[in-house]
Image (cartoon, helix red, strand yellow):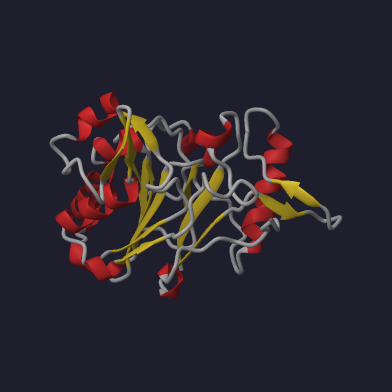
Length: 258
């Protein structure tokens, strides 16, 4: 399989002129023309982290800034970035899994490696959000809570929002045991397209379907929700996957208001 070193965009989500977005592939071509793997493990090698972060952001036309990133903890906590004077280091200490901002030309992002990166934008009021929606965040309704926070903080109307669900593990591969379905019992019907039984007490959970339904229930229009069609688990030469590899790298997904 041919290695991919191109920026990843969510299908049709890049047609909006009010913002730009992208996700990182597994590999990039370095200044020597050699294929190198992205490494965003900041705590292990700060110099490499900075080089790789700049390499990725430089691939996005017109974006020269580093995204604000959170201390992700699989929670339902949301951080609102309102003060441009806050440093990246300060924000990186915030324990939360969604970040919202109205600041233009300021990228915000999240790391994933199977969990779904969800980007939401209000093109009318110029507000953007980046969400880390794994299984725990999903059953804690982090997407709905982010939408409510956008409404509370900025007056956003759900029907004005557009959303993109980026690279993650799809329902074809996200296998869970029956006891992990418990938190979803009062949230969704435990049948297709949300859940599929594969026997022996095992199930396939479709986080894309669950989060899409939650956005529709929150008031987003179905035609304003866009999904990536690729699965991280299915594409070992293109993307990192925690489920497939265990110890692995991270995919960076960001959004920036123009």
